[in-house]
Image (tube, rainbow, N blue to C red; front, side, top):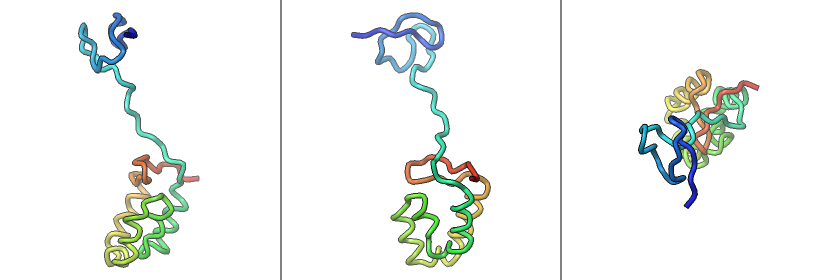
Length: 104
């Protein structure tokens, strides 16, 4: 049994505690938005020029939906257009759910 200190009040608690029994503070590591190693510029260019083929989805590792876009011509262009907008505004994610938010 290992003990750690609460992130909120500093009292000693068990390491498996999800929240502090004294103050109720959550003890897990704070969930931060993870950044992808993929970049917006290549994804945006691939989506703009080859979006109906789903190439941008292959680039970020989303193979399954890339194949679906390839077979449906990017959802007749609508799916590719939505992906392009999401990429440009920085809300598109890679296969691990990490946000693609760096341009270069």
